[in-house]
Image 1 (spheres, rainbow, N blue to C red):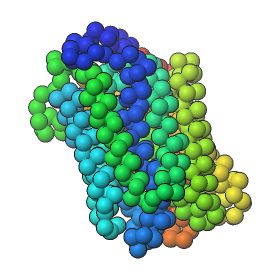
Image 2 (image 1 turned 180 degrees about the vertical axis):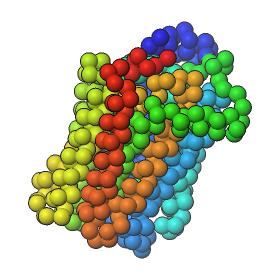
Image 3 (image 1 turned 45 degrees about the vertical axis):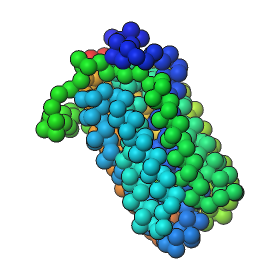
Image 4 (image 1 turned 30 degrees about the vertical axis):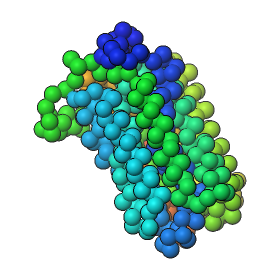
Length: 417
């Protein structure tokens, strides 16, 4: 069965009228887009935040790494809870935590306090990410799931396009602290939207039983499944390359290449436009090509872009090639991410929350490591960023090739149950 009927959604939560397909994907995309907003909106402010708090570039980049660790660990709680309690309670609680932590970030007196609060912010926001993916898996399977994840990226892709631009404009009238107030406001709006409009998509009879022991048993089962692990690592390594860009690009583009915060936000937005565009190409052609082939294509583009960036940083080949390399690495995620996610979740309908949590943990753990590594070269952030991207992209391509060999010519629809 490729989709659940609207009657099934209604039966799961009779008191809420089910969302239409387009409205549903808009809301789920907004949930998925909250964390990119939290990541990307303050990027133009990183240099000024560093000066204001009297800290170093590496310490400021740890605020990003802390957010990613919070996102990773929070999904370990939110995913299994959503399998036991339904999708709505965890996402509402997580969003409330996100709002409170955002206000705390705005008031942070030191970089150490900001690091802790960014972790809490990510921990709360994790519920939005994991529940959005689980709801898609509740409602769709097979190629339809791959297309739904691609459609989700159209909505969530607006966050990285708009976030740096919005952050740069907020900086015109206030400091980096005002950015976190805006994030708190976005969280409040999503709490209201989910309370009113998000249906419960996991019927009581389909929920899992048991506590921590049962959860650990599910995680062990998933980690032994190569059909889950290979595409999960491929997608996570692709995300790691992008997070190296997210952490390193404010310094590379603004301090090494002299862009203003506004010019930086334009470059960032253009890269995000390419990412969204390729995700929509993926949604249109996946039925003909299959998701594994698109995963290979995306990871191959990422390796090409990362190699170009590394050569450019070592040989000083010029700023235009820097922009081209970044565009290839970031845009490639639009092809690799939705197809890696669909392949990983294809055979795990009943435990979609736990599988989504483990997938998200892997993505953000890889991203946190990449964010930290991208600043290790000190003043030569361009070299450490490019090296991190190249290593992550190579791992992504290797796992994508292994995924293709395992699935052969079968489509994800044939694997799904």
